[in-house]
Image (cartoon, rainbow, N blue to C red):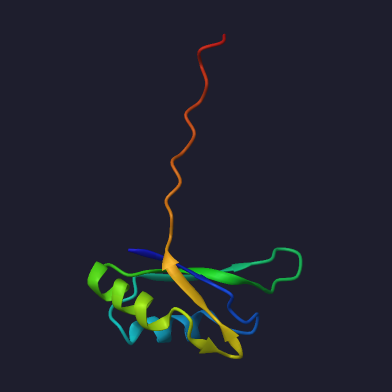
Length: 90
């Protein structure tokens, strides 16, 4: 299950986020979104956990938690369907 973590302090690192979620189970991947211009975190990221039960427990326990002075928000990441190319008007 892929989780979206928002409102992270800009100083929070990927290893810190991974460690928080590993307390609830295996973490398949962890990535923070980085601003290309500044090289700094944009304050949100994604964690993927292979077991839905562990991901749900992490979401429940970490949502609203104060991390480095910021109250983080954790929810299931929405999957956006890819747009189909419009080939009808050729």
